[in-house]
Image (cartoon, rainbow, N blue to C red):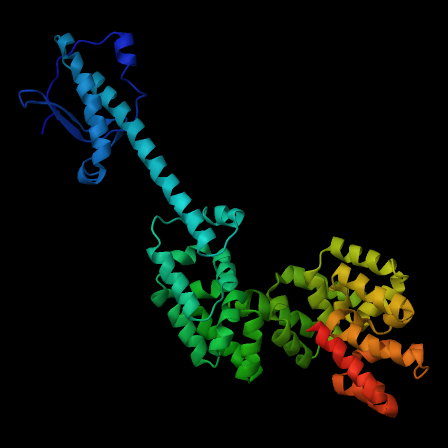
Length: 450
């Protein structure tokens, strides 16, 4: 319909300021005069909106009522109508009011959606307020229908509340997917390849991104490749449980990094051990991986020994500042730089033991049992043992034997490294008449640790 010409007198500045917001976008609307004649049909102002892409009346009734009230006020100036040939000034008044109302409506809707998303992530997914606010920048929803389907699906497949929170923190957009189409086919494939239902939660959480990758183009070809390497579904399942991300970075990281190790002189068996037990190390950026391999070489590790790949794994997980701090902790107990490096070569994971754990074990062994720090340096793996469940119960037996002069202090640290059977044979059963009391003492300390 053609836009009718409207004759009006331009209002004064004070009159216009009482009803005119800033000029903005447009909205298709009609307003009728008392005699049912169409007086305005706004279709263009600033940018072009057409009825096809504008808001519908039934869906936005409150918005339209507000505009209707505005138009009624505007038409109140009809007493000022005189001869004029352009409706443009009146159109600008209407368009400005529509822009103000539309922006307010959009902001209100977005705010409500954001608030609901944050509340859902906190109340249902177990997020902290800070985590929920961060995740809501990546995903938003106004109802709980879709996210509830995903949460219920994950719970059905054995994921705990903490595992679900970790899974969603990695990829909040997963809450908007159709779990039967996106998640179920991957889980069914993994089970068909020998992954047990009990292993599914840990496997998913080790690398949630696998659930959004193509099954036919990426996951199946990668699985087939590793299956050929391991020649054992059990070993492959173990590797995937530690880091299913190896399925995602096969050609970009894993294969090139395995090649670097072989070129450095690492045996195939040790390369496969790294892949089986510490697969995440092989998903490291290849340039960074190459740097660490060279560093480990310079520290004097023998590529033919398993400690080489263990050291590579450890160094990949530690920043330069963390390594320096670990040196300071050991020096506090009398170790020199040479001692620390010697311990690292024997047991690379001594560099990953928490600082307070190092202090607690050293305190017990040095001050309670009278061990020399140098003897601990020769058996650094003792630092990784459980203080409550292993070191203290065995330490009680050692103290009893020392008090009776039945053992020498130089053999103390080895007592903590033996297997359970080995410890009982060497430090309990062999002492005949004393064995009953020692075993009772040992058992009581184990019970306290449980």
